[in-house]
Length: 247
Image (cartoon, rainbow, N blue to C red; front, top):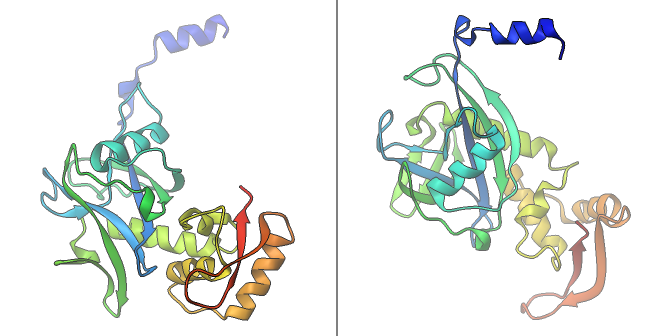
């Protein structure tokens, strides 16, 4: 750094530009026992949108952490979940997306097998729970035991963040290994188990023969998955070949 740049920085006034707040918001997907796609939502403890459901997230601590670190910290503080892979999704920056001030949100996605989730509300969350995603003519609905939430009831612009997350994962699932993150056991799975994950994310039924051909071509023949040369015979169903994800 030369003297001119040192002098410039010494006299620089950051207050000459308005600065937005920055948050990290996290869309956590998993599968329930019926292999249906679920999302993690938290019930907000304070204003704005008090008592409304939202995706977990919170404010960046300026000069102390990166936005990636914010995402990990907020997910743990609000839900008790830690040590999951967070993938940056998109930046939402509409000036009126938050009634408090101009807040820029960097959104993330996480795909986590249900048995790895240990959900416990904390910090700014009154409650945290999984909701099954259901689609109808009016849009998305989120269902959990005695609670049904329409997408319009979510806080902030979180319905847009969730929609973006679903569409982005649907678009990349055929060429990125996202689906493998939802397997109960990456070291021993069947083609049917993987196919069911694809169907849940895409919200459609796939042809079994075509899916098998695609799986063998794109994953087994390329070494991404390994044929274990053994079958699962303890399910009471037809024996199925087992594979391992070669992470």
